[in-house]
Length: 418
Ligand SMILES: Nc1ncnc2c1ncn2[C@@H]1O[C@H](COP(=O)(O)OP(=O)(O)OP(=O)(O)O)[C@@H](O)[C@H]1O
Image 1 (cartoon, rainbow, N blue to C red):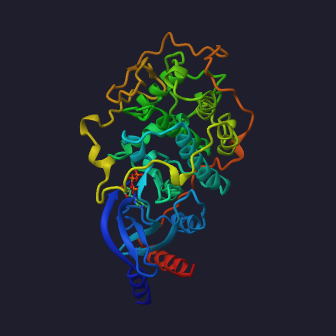
Image 2: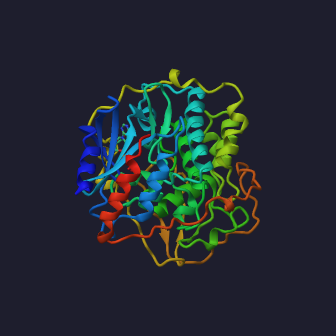
Image 3: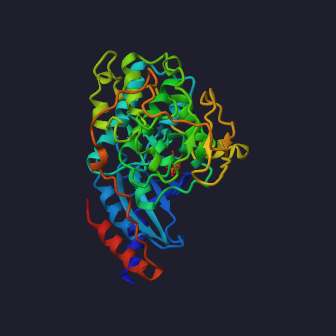
């Protein structure tokens, strides 16, 4: 009884306005917080319809996410269940980095790019210090506020609500930012997955278009290998033990320095270190922030001086509306481990419509151990990240009978005054 009243009271705090868009976890509304007069964004997450019921860990972790407060993280100001859905309330942001990158009326100077990537890394560093991974970094998850401040959105949601369902259209784009260890099915991922994604975003800021546009997970790896060269066992010793590992035909690294000719030597050096294959050897976010790129001229632009587009049009989810069903991913699935994939030279040059090149014959492929690799090969680093949260998320579920209890618990948790 009291439970229902409380729920209504909490929900009545917010006056819903228009739909801003729909993402992986549900619909996002613009709303007014009647207590503060502030505009907020409310993400309505469909927990009621999930077959397995509400995730117990989710509710606990949502509470933890509320504690994540940093200038480069979107603040989760409130969370409450309402009509079988979980509502997450966030500070409202005007635009996002994808809109900045795609707007070709906007010129991004090297100092602007440095500022945007530095804010991205600062937000990541804060969360990694708290042992929270993002796992779904992409430019449209990097929101931009009225004073130019970039803030990471959706932090921890992948862990709380499980891996996004890639059948949804908008997930087609998320693949482009996935680290090779995730594409090979690792269960033991760490903060390196966010570093790889940040590197893809860094590359995209430089190129003004997505760097590695795979049309399927296999094609994504093909694009990565075509760009950086197929990894040798000496570059990434654990690769062959990954669950979905398949042997790819050896491809030498492409002329990446030429592709990134607009980047300074420092920018290119940092980018290369963030794109290290072996997650254990990949530069950490903290180390990236300490890279000389950030202290060498030009210094990062002040956020309030950064070029950015006009606030977003309302009720438009550009990703979903841009989606072309003809470009839906085609996954070719020959038997695991008995397939070999041939990275296509030049296919990483931004052509998303290439189909996979899969060859079922194992034969003349050699990944020569110790074979000398590229001049662009990043210098291996000796830090062992395996101590850093490398355990897979533990997501026990409950049945619907327990849901009422959890709903009540969540209400109590989030009713505490700030
Ligand atoms: N805090 C916010 N302020 C303003 N708009 C927001 C906010 N959070 C999300 N949005 C907008 O709501 C829409 C849906 O966002 P959401 O994060 O759910 O999905 P997405 O980013 O489009 O895709 P995905 O779920 O795959 O990341 C987007 O247009 C996004 O820009």
